[in-house]
Length: 301
Ligand SMILES: [Fe+2]
Figure 1 (cartoon, rainbow, N blue to C red):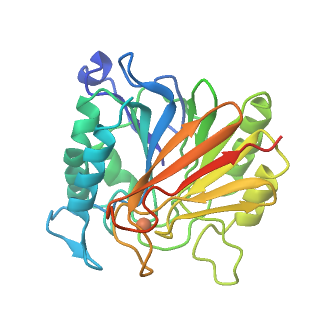
Figure 2: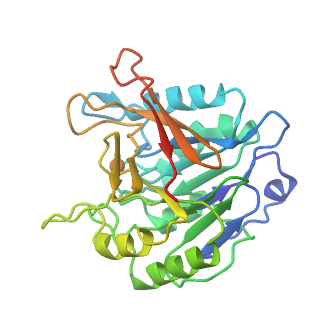
């Protein structure tokens, strides 16, 4: 359930002209205010898992401290990115309202800096609680009844953020036929554009699915449509840069804890151009061997 937070400085935000529960948004506010923002640069975060208790910790990580550090690093980006994107699991386990209050406090420096923030939901988020804490945007256009997607139009690429949240605190996710049909139509409508697709759950074709249940249907939608240049996901709390056929597939790392020893916690600095996506991993542990890991992913044609 992606949702966009406009910069806190925007008059429309302060006027409270914000409404929740609308399914599809075409974001026309995908750029940070100010001339210093780079319209081709994006800060990508995933799996922040913020609890109401700032001392909450799991697997040796105090999640509040990790996001606080990441936000500090993102806020220091120069030039500033066009937007910060958080690809789901903003909340700890159950998407409690108080989790989102804590989350909002942590990302406040980015809002005050005047950058748009685009948020997706993961399997540890809760839609009603999220909406209560972070009302949606009145610009959104209703298209799907029970799922929400976001299109972020930028000069070089359009980002499509999907909604794979099925049940809160249940591991697998699903897009569903209506969303997949919408996606196919939207991609066909954007044949002349370059598209990056984001979804919380990873492609997963194993017998016991812990990622996206309708992976085959998603790949059938994406792979033949060459305007789709990359698929980004989170959920596994691992950093992976791989391919499905000629489609770049990137597993964004968790800002919070990891499940496998040796995996990095961190965030990703993304640069897009007309022919490539360049990703640089920023580990929170600067001594991690993957810190600074950089991949230039040339777009398929
Ligand atoms: Fe997660």
